[in-house]
Image (cartoon, rainbow, N blue to C red; front, side, top):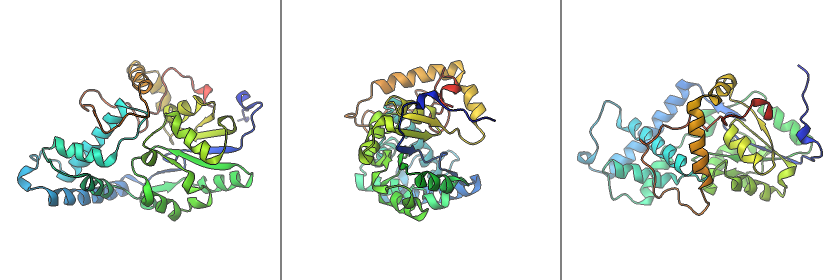
Length: 301
């Protein structure tokens, strides 16, 4: 297949390439491995919860183990919070406390919420696999003189995440102190502020940058709003399904609702306050709101 050159790059001088992480530079481990790791962290968090509250106060079992049920309820609550305020990253420990409160377990402090949230963390080295060409691609881009940066949405950041980056060798390619991690900044793609945070740290103008990621809404839509050239890297094996989903009437409706919510989000809002009832609406399809409705693929090729 002949190489297609984009006319939109004409007149640009590209100095910097920004990357997403999940499904862009790495993918999750096999389901059996992932399930085993999450089950371990679920149980670790459950042990903390059980040590803090009397057994009589726990909600009745419905067949699902308590440890797994808490993870499920927390995931739903966080996703609902993101739906309400798409440009902000929820406060993980506060979300834990909110779910405990919904369970009728009251009186926990923020320190306990932090401990439970941290117990649920799945570490990167054992749970993700780099794509076969990740390091060779980064090495070649670095050899050609490009500045490499990171803009990624994730709930867990902080020092443990930096330790994971050192362990997998990403410190050879990225200045880890200049990564834009939504958990640390409390803002998330497609919020333009998270892209600008990375560019300001790297001293690069938007017109001199390229963003590479798997999410059309978060990576492509978010970066194009700043005139950053964007490259869509679809999730492996899922491009056709995602493209078909983009033309779904239901998806178009959900996309319009999401866009309306995103437009009303400001950086001064606190994502831990006024969290929505997650039973209100089903979450958008995909792990990271993958498809922009009514946008043909060739605009992002």
